[in-house]
Image (cartoon, rainbow, N blue to C red; front, side, top):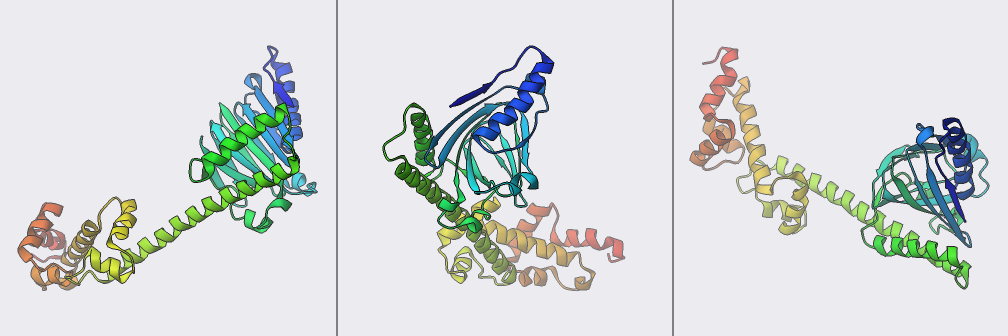
Length: 323
């Protein structure tokens, strides 16, 4: 079926049509929501919906709007449903289960009909949503709560194939249902779940790499005084290849060797500015932090600070009465 809300010339009539009617159409196609249309006199929107067994397809295009489902709405839910929303244009801000996310074109997110949710759509909002009972989620409702209000990349892995299939299938259902609609719907839901699993695996791999990067950074901090400290040593100590270590460091916008040098220089600067070490020679401080070629160290220090190590110490300690 297709529902259309169009702008009228009468602002009063538009308020009635754009408000109550839009809420009615969204309720009938998707879920019951409370609506806030900030520019009612300019609001227009289109909803197209179709159904394949227990799988619903909802295409929506409209202007700026806000919608929320309160505890009152969710208390009336008899059968929890999962909504997967793919953004075609505009943006959607989604909040559920204590998380917030922004969905941009090419991304998608999920939310659960049985818990409060808030959505804010921009102008030029266009989306494709699918909806099906949570009972069809093989991992159960608890697993869904871990991924609500989380943006995923629709262009990664299975995403393009799954969303392309959903686009075509939704349009095809409106012209005529396929044979064995129940079986088709079951298989489609399985593919959507597989797509979500793939996205979660990728996200968890990213989180794991972040943990590993932090572990490597801590190793470097703990071994700055070792003159043999190198990318190869850091990689070996953390049971990864040197190549993968460099991949991890790409997110820091520096190289492993540059990071080691910069942290060493920072430690030297801290010691040179510390009254407790004012009697220690510059050479001993440099060696303490892994610099063995003192001549090269002096050149590196001056390039980084604009001063010689001795000059830097004088300028930092002059306030303490030490010349």
